Image (cartoon, rainbow, N blue to C red; front, top):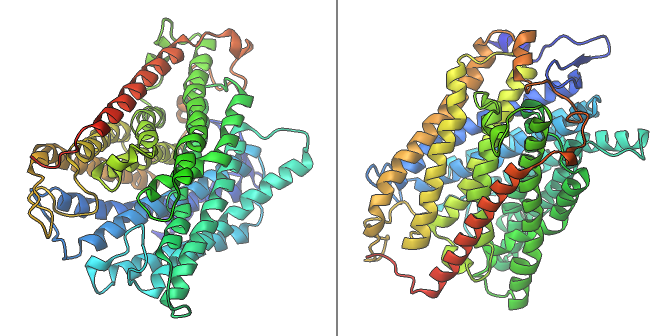
Length: 578
């Protein structure tokens, strides 16, 4: 088994350690490729752990099954699920994205390889510590969840593990930064490729989030260690949400970077406007982390002016940047395919796309579902007034499953499939099972996320509790009116978990038992007409993009409809139960 795993990190390189990718044409150095594989494999392991606890959480929340009692370890399982899927799976993958967007796209060696390995080791140690202290906590009902609010009395080692993981992520990201610095020193007047630029902005956002996380968990650590006697819970919450929400902004930036990359290499997309897309990335630097304010809307001590500015005027900057990407990426896909003469009419460029390629399907479903479900719900719950009907309800859970599970996870699934084909150079053990993943996961998790939002907004079902349909623990409140929707939600979450298991089966099975890819296998990944960096000889602006324009009108109609509907619901008496 060890020999099999070792062979996974071997490819044919020249005497300088480089090889030319037969799909992208990129000049890839062994040092960068090996570390992308290392962090990607570790991320999949974290996904497996989090997925196991997704099953126990889902089967508990679906009260027909009621797997775990409220005070019998449910919060321990919920904490394990959240930390492994929302943090460890994501961040390990995001370091891999940085290495792809940096040294691989730039055709450079990965500098400071010992630092990269040290960062990986520190991250693994931190992740193991967090998991250990959550699982061995004496009182399962006191598990810290992802929020880990003080003054919840959790082991000192938990905070230490969280700090260790964040420090490790910082160390692991440093080689990427050095590769960008080296590139600019050699070509100061040149511009970074858009994917490398997106990865760089992801790095900057990550630094902001990590510093906030280290500050928050260090504050809790010295309190739990007895160095200080008291802790200000309000200040802690504000510090915590720099990482609590900021980590999801890292997901957003990494996901969009993957969108630009994969739509180009497997769909034939071009960049509609480099300046506009770069401007959208820069706007994220100033505005995207302000979205964390919606977690604090019910907290005392925050002025009305602060709330209004952060959830209205400043928040619009982030929303506008997302709108730019929402147009630029499908527009680039449409322009690139029309330049190749692929598909006529309004949507022929889209219907003729390689939908039987699981890499392409994962990417496009991620774009569509993130936009219509994750993006719209994020803007709605980010408004100060509307947030009052969303806060701490099941609708919040629906929102972040629409962003993290539907958006980022689907995009990362596509990237993992791409790495298996091009870096590990392995064919899938089953093309049908691989294709089942994006379609099955998008359908099941899409419907599940929508139901969560609906249940939370219209019935007021709370988040984080294991039982609500029969009654809320400690009260006579009944939410039985929502029970029919849970009868649909339960099977959908179970189906999504099963499809996630299929993804792991295909990924791991292909690495261990997949045949070696050939030149024809690699060529099959390329878009029709081959991969043309500039999208063709014609100017991109000479190509019509009426299909994208129509899709954007549909998106705006959906957004306006839901926006108005939520304001209407705010004017009504919010009835709970029936």
